[in-house]
Image (cartoon, rainbow, N blue to C red):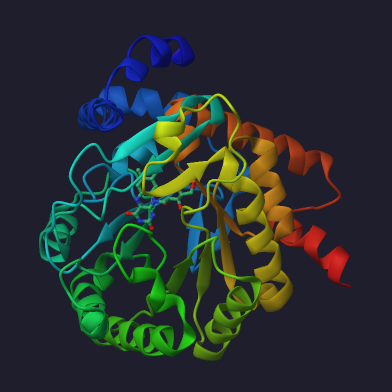
Amino acid sequence: MYHLFFRLVFRRMDAEKAHHLAFRWIRAAARVPGLRAAIAAVLAPSHASLATTALGQRMRGPFGLAAGFDKNAVAIDGMSMLGFDHVEIGTVTAQQQSGNPAPRLFRLVGDRALINRMGFNNDGSAAVAARLARRRTVFPTTVGVNIGKTKVVPEGEAVQDYVTSAERLARYADYLVVNVSSPNTPGLRNLQATEALRPLLAGVREAADRAVTGRRVPLLVKIAPDLADADVDAVADLAVELGLDGIIATNTTIAREGLGLTSDPAVVAQTGGLSGAPLADRSLEVLRRLYARVGDRITLVGVGGVETAEDAWQRILAGATLVQGYSAFIYQGPFWMRAVHKGLATRLAASPYATLADAVGADTRKVTS
Ligand SMILES: Cc1cc2nc3c(=O)[nH]c(=O)nc-3n(C[C@H](O)[C@H](O)[C@H](O)COP(=O)(O)O)c2cc1C
């Protein structure tokens, strides 16, 4: 049904316009109490076996919405209603910015992929903090807050820019993410080098501790799939050294590997980050590498090309405690999360593992032991 609708309606529209339209419907439905309860009952059923504790939070399951879909924290309950077990908002920057000129989001339907160069279009951390302060929780979902650098701020002043956002947003975050991996802000990914990353993560950690007393807000870093293996290892070691809580692997890629022949070369040539199916292999590889390095000392979040319950299960076996998705939601529609949950519960029941937590990293441990 959704596939037909996608072909007839969304596919004929500009990709960003289709996103805004779907987003409006989700938000509208989430505002009507009876309707949102009915939708949640169908789409967000909870399987007791999938209950997950991660980053100090108890969640219905391990499967959440990746950053970038709800950049301004306007649809947390709507996305929770559809079945995401956690919602990561952002990327939010210290200053409001409109992002790159449109068109800036492109579909590669045959490859089940997207290319985007949105460029962190967002309302800015002061406005998003005010929105989160006003939020009346409907569904008690875990909210991650993903922060990034304002485009006009020079790389040398990046730490202060992130610190400003952390100070404003940490109190509303169940976990905080330092995004240094989007390809659409010039120079951003240079911050993944340990010499730059160390002061950045230390600064944000201190800012979060200053802003929030009485609990420690978990801090994660989100990395690119385009890092060389040695650099993935270096980030993993730094994360352990700094006592970071988690690593999110991965953001979109600037590579164009794994694409079939059906995609229009003019679209493939668009500047931006590639997400969806072609990203899956490298994201999984980076995740395995991280788990082999950090084991259970740090919570890993697997994202990039997750399309099916089997994909999500493989991420868990590779080392992910939490799994996220974005692009497949565009192609699969509102029943996707339900299918992933059902498939995960089935796989867990058929596996030798008593709990999801036991399954985390089981495959990677076999290879490395
Ligand atoms: C249109 C679009 C916008 C995105 N914006 C952000 C963002 O603002 N911050 C971020 O950390 N990741 C962003 N991402 C990356 C996703 O969070 C995710 O890491 C990536 O798409 C891989 O997952 P997927 O293959 O399931 O889409 C964006 C992705 C897309 C497609």
